[in-house]
Length: 152
Image (cartoon, one colour):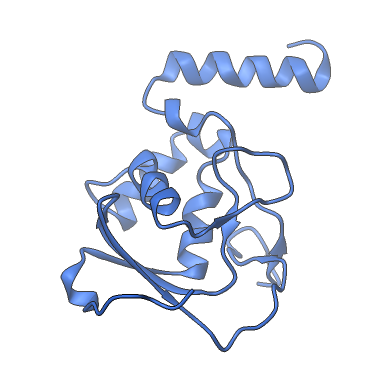
């Protein structure tokens, strides 16, 4: 998993540590998406970027792990990631932490935890690619609610 090429972090627009990747993944959940929190988060922290673009980088760089919740699009950040450097899905590099030898199973975004402890699992949704289409997102949310509760 070691980086196979030499790179300079300054060659890329963004540098995200594991906890930052998990924070972005937190905003892929349907609740922050439908309430506008995802857009606000990106406007504040990553101006000019969006969730779909970041997810494309995360997939291309192969840093996502299955979160155990059955989401086919996102999960949690790989436990050996120190940093992912990127400009877009075609320009990225991963700095792996080879000193870590075991998966701790943690999802490191602590924004919702008052004790700041790492969480287990992540907040994900199989509709992350349609967030720019509010009608499609609403339809998907209603479909999921019907699946879970048997009614909407």
